[in-house]
Amino acid sequence: MKLEFNPKAEFDMIAIGRACIDLNAVEYNRPMEETMTFKKYVGGSPANIAIGASKLGLKTGFIGKLADDQHGRFIKNYMAEVGVDTSQMPIDNDGHKTGLAFTEIKSPEECSILMYRDEVADLYLNPSEVSEEYIRKAKVLLVSGTALAKSPSREAVLKAVHLAKKNDVQVFFELDYRGYTWESQLETSIYYTLVAQQSDVVIGTRDEFDVLENRENGSNEATIHELFKHSPKLIVIKHGVEGSYAYAKTGEIFKGKAYLTKVLKTFGAGDSYASAFLYALINGMDIDTALKYGSASAAIVVSKHSSSEAMPTVKEIEQLIAEREAVYQNK
Ligand SMILES: Nc1ncnc2c1ncn2[C@@H]1O[C@H](COP(=O)(O)OP(=O)(O)O)[C@@H](O)[C@H]1O
Ligand SMILES: O=C(O)C[C@@H](O)[C@H](O)C(=O)COP(=O)(O)O
Image (tube, rainbow, N blue to C red; front, side, top):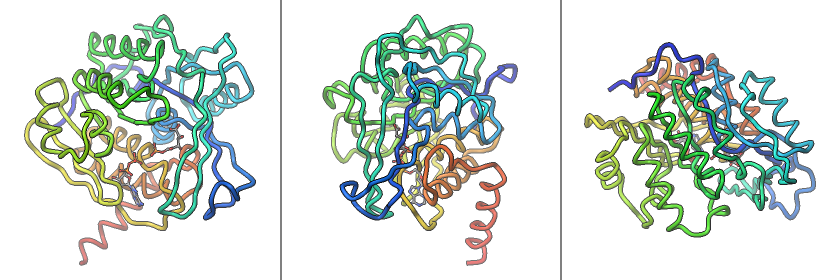
């Protein structure tokens, strides 16, 4: 099974959603109450994915609203420096602020995120700020689920999905569930289902698919049975260190294993996985290989301090895959 991308498209991928700030505990392996210093990085799942993809050499753009403040300017400069096109990142004129995520690293296994997302600029992206001219230039539109949490960002994303489908741009939906921003799980389920049914590729953790289905302890089989009645051609369900599965509508099932490593913190895994998985698919690699790229990228990022700055190069990913696969083959 292979996805077809428009070979003439100017951008490999355009992401839509939030570009924010991560403040990662500098003194880690302790609770946040005892953490006195935090290091600033660009964050926000779709921004991390765009940065990761750009570092891998994909031509990447971003649609997202920024606050008119120091953080907004820092984000725009950083993203431009790593090669992301920031021409569709309007500035909020109504005093809304940049979203912040403080990360707590209690131990490599016990990490949590404290988010400040009330009245954040990214959720004020207006449908009028989503341009058909821009979206039609992409091979892939990557949608972050959190951008569906509130209006007007919700309508801006729905418009972007509509324009992508109209112009044969592949829609990748990263569920990216952050409970803080939603009114209820039922509300999330309604909008996740609406967008998932229209997407070409849906990526999420097992827990996030349970949110989409508004249930507990769902099964991958039930998920794919339902979603394959609609547009999706590929569904990726992640199971943390146990690895991930990619299900193709054509019936094939691919299993990706996690590459175990010395973990510093667990967050950043999903975003680095998504950027490398996408890189591999866009470059015509098969799904087994794309899963290896995703896992290797995640293994590199969980061993480092940030999610965005730690995004690896193609060389680092390929080296890790070669080393690990050689070990598996000698066993
Ligand atoms: N502790 C870990 N060590 C190595 N790889 C990991 C680890 N945790 C996750 N990964 C890799 O990252 C992928 C995505 O992680 P997961 O935790 O399922 O997603 P998310 O970060 O979105 O919650 C996994 O399929 C796996 O390949
Ligand atoms: O998405 C956010 O707003 C916070 C991220 O920037 C943070 O780095 C993170 O949680 C990444 O984790 P992941 O989505 O599991 O890759």
